[in-house]
Length: 92
Image (cartoon, rainbow, N blue to C red; front, side, top):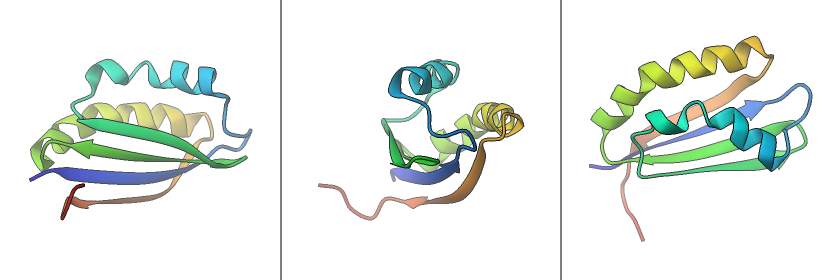
């Protein structure tokens, strides 16, 4: 069963422009085991993400690598505000 996560992040110095944002994500992209991921700007200081995984096991395998990256982001003052996750109930 597919599995998804959604996160919200606070950026104290403002959400970076698209080029800088992609540069920061470049470190984790080769490690990705997702089917699809979206990152979006909510307002000047918040961004969000939605990630779809083939199953919960793929998500759990990826979490060790992702948590290392998130630790680095937190040291830069970027903090996760919220995270929700769960199995996909439907798809269109």
